[in-house]
Length: 588
Image (tube, rainbow, N blue to C red; front, side, top):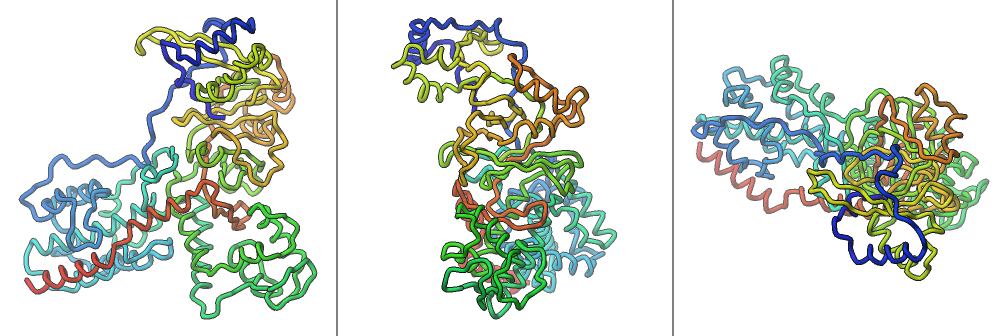
């Protein structure tokens, strides 16, 4: 459930609240004053909206009469297919500011090795699911081989190379698309900015430019796993004979079919089986059947291991389609901050699953089912935050919209409904900086009827979502579990509490069990915060290095694909680029 405590902060009650007051009066329920509230419900400061990455400070001064300075001020480069480089202009300015706005590639100490390393970086972009054409690599090679007649030409060529390199490194590190520009909820903590000017200068002087790729490449295990599978599938896509799986009939474990050979190859390429010891075997054996059952479960199909038309279709897509899906997954994984050494909690929204890792290399993470926000209007957001505290036997502060739409109509028809549901009114006093006055808020007392269950895991965030228990257990048996108002309900809250409090003195299985059955709310501040990642990945590699494909429950793949497609330079732009290149050459 999403709670929005501030939504009810209004010094003048709405008509709905007058109706509520009437219901409470008839039901004999007395509003609770703020002073009566337990001290275990602290006010949590709402953090400012997070940026994808902290931008570097802009240069204090850019000389307009300098050829390089003039280009930097315009934030446009006519020799590049994507002329506008404003997204990375601050980084480019820093580089030239450190070099007194003089060329770094086409100067008296021109290094052919550095130039070749630059072209090698851009030409090898496909290793990271990026397109060399997006960085004008062929055009840059032409410029490097063309004669340079004056300072203006040298400046233009120089900045073109720098912009393309910085654009690639920026895209590699945190993605081509700014997630804030895509129409779905993203709350991602910033990555620390790298000193690209200092790093570039260091590697240019040492002539080790190629090492920059490793520096900027995402360190998250998920990204590295996806990258391996991406490159394996690229080889498969390049083969003349595609590995098609078209059995033409229903297959059951133990059956034989010539296309089982192709099924094995597809499963191996996608990381769904660890090896292929019998590459020519035509038997649909037990190992293949187990892999198929997992795929069927992920896709919401009956997980019986029987391969019918729907299951066969999952493995009969051309490699290009699989590569496109992996490309989206790699783009999303660039948005995630690099992992820390300690524990973390990961929720993959379309997988309806949670993993809790003690370390990035934890081979046996805690795993459980979850329930996420309902599609399309109550989506669980993508976020990265720090879990700060737990609440055992929590109150549920009912959001105003949920109260008015779902609870108030029932209360209007049943005078005793609010009392029967342990719902009470709480009056709060606004702080002076908020103008004073008071406001009313509805909350539900702890107990079996409380939708937050026996424990709530809190990581303050702008979306005001959290992990929590639930008294409704049957929904965890459904294959598709987008049923909440946005928060994430966990199937095994006791084990998650044990994970979070595992190294905290005074807490063990018994004390956690007691807190989860106590009559009063208990607030527990964590001695060490735990990172929490709410992630959206329809293509995901698990800790056992197996690739999983999940339904796109929120339609986010399509939104991201559209955003990426907008970045592709049209043919008209390419023609204009070629024409401008010829003109520049002829003018020399």
